[in-house]
Each structure stands twice: as C-alpha cells, then as structure tokens.
Amino acid sequence: MYYYAEVLRGTRASRVIAIILGIFLALAIMFRLWAFAEHSRIHVSGAHAMSPNIPVAVLFAIAEVIGLVTATLLGGVLAKENDGHLEIAWTKPVSRDRLAAATMGVDIVTILLSQFATVLLVLVICAMFVWPSFYSDAATLPSIAITLLGPIAWYACLTAFSASLKRGLGMVVGLGWLAALVVPAVAEGTARSSSDFGRAIHWVFQPIAYIDPIEYVHLSFHGSGGMSAMQNAPLGPLGVSAGILIVLIIVYLALSVLQWRRVEA
Image (cartoon, rainbow, N blue to C red; front, side, top):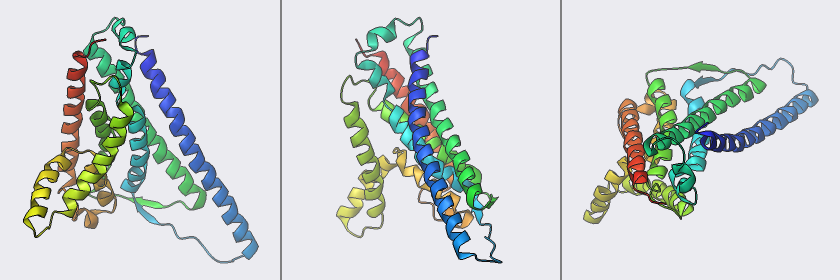
C-alpha cells in the first residue's frame, strides 16, 4: 500500500479528535445526570421542556471549530515529509505530484470526517436533553459550504506556506494563526477610519484578509443565524465567499505541490 503512512497519520489525528469529542460527551452525560437528579429532587410537576427551533447551519458551525483543530494538526504535511523523510518518500513507485495529491487528499477526508462526527455528537447531546426542531432557509446551504470549506482552506494555507521548509513547521503554524486572527481584525477595525493613516492601513490589510481562510470562518455564524443575520455578512453574499474558498483551496494546494517538486533531500 503506497499511502499507508498517509492513512496512518490521518488515523492518529482522528484519535486525537475522538478523545476531544469523547470528553465533550462525558461532560454532557455528567451534566445530564446532574440535571436529572436536580429535577427529581425538586419534583416540578406539569413542566414540559420547550423544543428549541435551531438553524441546521448551527450544527455545522459548531463542527467547524473541530475541523479547524484537525486542519491544524494535519497542516504542513509536506514540510513533515521534508524533515528527514524525503529519501523514503522518493522510494515510493509514484510521482511526486501524485504522492503529494494523495497525501493531502487523505488529510482533507480526515478533516471532513471530523466535522461530520462532531455534527453527529451534537445531535446526540441535544437528544439527551430535548430534541430540537431544525429549520433551513436560503442562507443554510452556502453557510454549510463555508463551514466545510473553511478548515480545508486553512489546511491548504498552512501546507502552502511550509511546503518548502525542512524545519520550523511549528513556527509557521503558530505565526500563521496569529496573522490569520490579527489581519482580519485590523482590516475590519480600520474599515471606517476617518484618518488617512487608518485608511492606508485598511488598504494594506484588507487585500491580505481576502486570502486568509480564517476571515471566512465567522461568515458561517452569520449564515447560521438565518437570512436576517446574513444581511450583515461582512464579505457579502455567502455563496460568493464559498466560491472564493474553493479558489483559495485550489491555489494553495497547487502552490504546495509546485514548491514540493523543487525540494531536494
């Protein structure tokens, strides 16, 4: 099996996510048992829990957080190959491009699986308390698309910025998160500046924010709030933002492969 190591890495990341989800489930069970004990002690009669009406997109917005954790764990995979593993990688009877594509493909599948597992867990936890009713509207599909594409774009971004490195992946990830959070904040904070200096900063940071996958993450929470919340989405229509994320994924993955072609053992 040519891609055993790639599958094994995805499996290890999945175990970490399973532990995290297991902790959340255990906490939910403990809270449910406590709530049941309190209810039995108080003996409130005639009270019925109301079933909340929740947007479907909220489930995926919650899962997006776990998707970002998984993407961070797996990001920079080609740099990991560069660090003492290139000789082994080149012995595989496949081309560099195919190996890189398969490696990133396995990671992307792992990211998606972690998100769907989280959605399932959220449903289970909801059922432990009260089964809510779910609804969807015009914002639902593009919002879900953003929640699924955002972590993949972040993974692709980390991989692209580290594909040619043999050391320092941890620094790339750490500084990457710092920049990904600071750049959109500065761009948004200076958007309505009345000073020339503030507008100049905005003109510099806003274009960078457009290629920052994390900039699009909070859009899913606008969409998960329904059509009324979507009207205030900072980057415009959610469908357009989902399309931009697809472009970013393609560009970042292509840059990753192009850089890795030139890396020498």
